[in-house]
Length: 198
Image 1 (cartoon, rainbow, N blue to C red):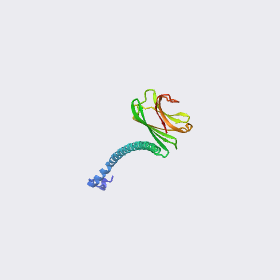
Image 2 (image 1 turned 120 degrees about the vertical axis):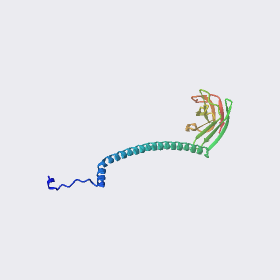
Image 3 (image 1 turned 45 degrees about the vertical axis):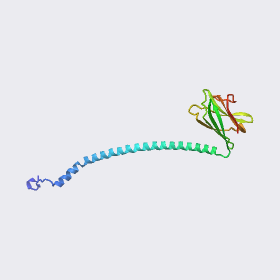
Image 4 (image 1 turned 90 degrees about the horizontal axis):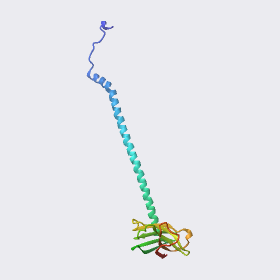
């Protein structure tokens, strides 16, 4: 409409730097979308690695805590045994024994203060099928049942057992061991392995 007056400017090509800026703006949303895609992928990878590291850390801490508890329990047992063995009221008796032609020994740690015993058998023959070694408290009223120790081939080298002397047993003056049925016996009936006065 204004062409007839000559007021319309002549078309010109834009300057090169202006053209570059316009084209960069036109393509910038695509670049932003691609950048966001890479950032999202990197975030997912970082999240997966963090989750795997957290899972591994939790399992490692749980395994280490279980190992620590096991070692603490083992240490408590060793300390208890050492305190028991070295106690001032503990009497120690060692008895040589022969079982099925094998020479071995039985060591008895008897603590009169706590009324606890620790019996350690070494080098004894394994128990026959259906039989066990039975330990007896020797008292003024006769022999009272203490404990049974069944030894197989793996335990025949060394076997130890700790137990308390019941309050109804009374004063213990000795110890004995016999071979009894696997379920144990109320009175010694089998062959005597040893009889000892403490």
